[in-house]
Length: 523
Image 1 (cartoon, rainbow, N blue to C red):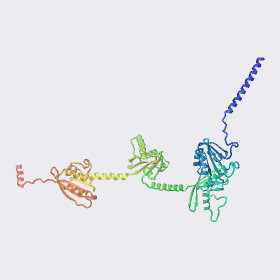
Image 2: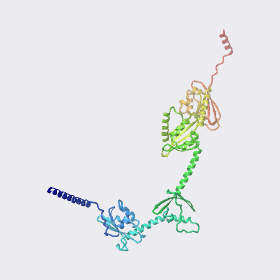
Image 3: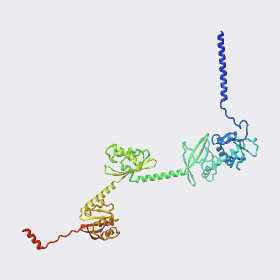
Image 4: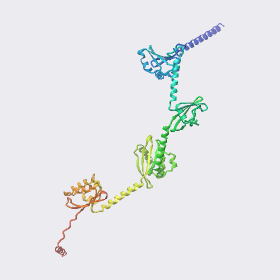
């Protein structure tokens, strides 16, 4: 029994000690908990509107001061206070800046503040104390009089801002009636009133209530012309704040853009060149009717906005692009086409299997877009081929002429010579001479003939403008042969010069001698 009693007694003592230790720890923990810092102006410590700053940091403020500038807490409190009270106290920032040197300053409110308010600014122990009081009454009589005056001034200022704002502002009640409007709204409401009717309550509605939540665009037909507005509605409780932002410039810009796009579309529609514009993702965004004619692609396919690769695949299926030797090389060509077009270097001539010839040009556009132009130059290429064939035929014809021929343009450039000319003078002007002009060729002729003034006259004749008459001349080659030279004007100011070596006649023998010789030979 004694052992059991001792054991029970020990248990009771241990439990008591645990409870006491827990209470002690709890009291210590509560004593270390952070408590909100007590305000210097709480519990009647001070009345009025008072701010206490340590540099730019707000240390404390009276309840009236916090009500006046609730945004002063946090970083930038000093600047917020000056922005808020600056219009109320002219020159406050400049005067407060001299506090460390002066110790204290007094600033009187602006003349429009009723009742007037006085600002006492003190610099004590490195801290700045600002106190707003009414100079006509005891601060204890109206402890918040300065704050009330400041709030009244703010209300008047904001009311003036709203009333004179060029933006239409009005407030609607729960039933949609206009219960308040600013000056800009009232001006238009009065102008739209029927003749002889005055403005009455409730205020007339200028805009119908929108059916959707999206801000619509509305028009007012004023006497000076239509005015457009973008409407915005902000529900606040049972009321709705409404705003009408002027949209005349936006409407005019949209109208001008729409008219420009219509003109551009008509211009594209009349172009004989096929136009295809792809965006940065290489999706077709714009094309003209000529593209369907040149590529044989269905309009439904193009309207579906295919990619650049899909368009080229469809053109290949219709044999509207040059057929490559193998498909892989063709796909690599497509990649090169896109890269070169993006850098503004792509321009090719496609000879199609059907006999057409297309000129394809790729040009980069802003924001990574690409524009491709397809032009049918089959007629131009046919004309070029025919012209080249005519030139080759003409060259073949004059090459069969025995006389050496040289044809010069109006500017004195050699445009044609034949094979007999090359054999006579020992050079081909198109190959051996870099400058095949009359001056260069006359120098060549002068070096290969006996001294003569003929070549100076030839130069003057070729370069002479106006009417000219043909003439003849002669020159002797270094090998002794005599040349008959003819100079003839051609149409368009061109000149034809021909050279023919003169044939030397063989001596005719006497009749008797010749007969005798022949007889002798016969014998």
